[in-house]
Amino acid sequence: MKRLKKMPKEELEVMGYDDIAYLILEETNKKMKITDLFKDICDTLELGDDIFENHIADFFEILTIDQKFIMLDDGYWDLRIRHSEKVVIEEEEDDFDEVESEEKDAEDEMPIEDSYYDEDDVDDDRSEDDLKDLVVIDEDDENM
Image (tube, rainbow, N blue to C red; front, side, top):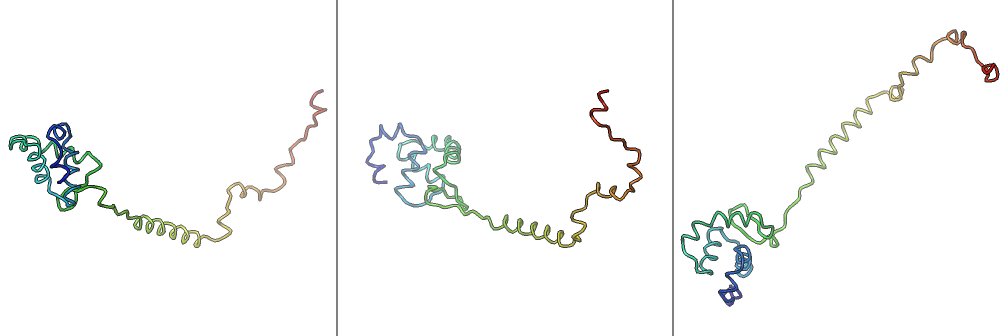
């Protein structure tokens, strides 16, 4: 908190709680509980206990909205840039592989001749008698 202690009080007073919290976490280089962090801010700004008690909820809201901060599993807060997020894609890939293998199994079970089945082809077995009443009209004959 060397840099923070050297700042004039007037400059600190125009800074937001989030900016001061960022400087505190950056300079101490360690994670902190929200109550300890806000207490340091109140002490730095020489604010009383009533401000601490009345504004701790607002400070919590500020930290949750500001993307520069991250709340850790153990209730501590730290700068997001110090932590990398783990992305687990393995589960989704496993599900995809499982569905894909089920589709292949279903395809393997179908006989080859059934895989190209077309309902319209069933009517092709009709006899030629259906066409005996068919009359072909020439265009020249139609215009007469």
